Length: 217
Ligand SMILES: N[C@@H](CCC(=O)N[C@@H](CS)C(=O)NCC(=O)O)C(=O)O
Image 1 (cartoon, rainbow, N blue to C red):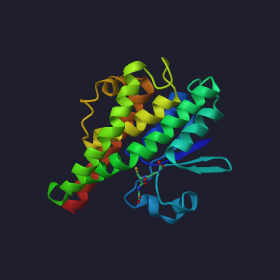
Image 2 (cartoon, protein in one colour):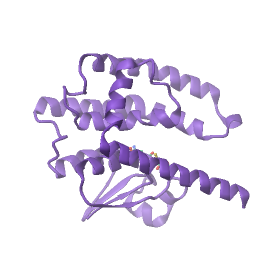
Image 3 (tube, helix red, strand yellow):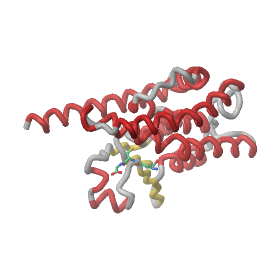
Image 4 (cartoon, rainbow, N blue to C red):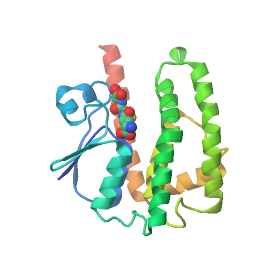
């Protein structure tokens, strides 16, 4: 049995989406990143103290996109590209997403979660500016093909769209990147993505409710 640790409103979203695409049986343990990921039991699985983490029998794996690569290969998923060249393109966009977008969107997201008065506006400005160049690269790519490795949705699209998804919580405006916005919309329109978004929204709501209860108490 596969077990995925990590609340859906975190980078675990990427792996939950993958699991939903695969339609396989899995157990979800919604460890949060506000304490849960730092508990001793969880640190034994992921010593980084971060979510997500996947357990498959003897295999314990951290790093959200490495988990997705493993899940797709394990299941011989049709999302895994058919040719070695497309496999290389898929890896290129997966690594590009983590190197060029993930940290910037992540820091914007962390700022947005802070009360307005505590936000670092300079950091928000710098991260927003730094995102323009890579977002233009992505938009140019998507101007000439409907998906990242051709016409079919593949693991490249799932991995990168799940990184771009942080833009929603980070309130980063994708609208100027018209091809990216259209591609992102198509990716999120997939039934598996919709189910995962519902999980993430419910988790975010539980987090908000918990915070107001903590503040009241
Ligand atoms: N590169 C890692 C990053 C994981 C990560 O930073 N997760 C965040 C939640 S989205 C976390 O657990 N943060 C808790 C902490 O850093 O204390 C991955 O993609 O799995």
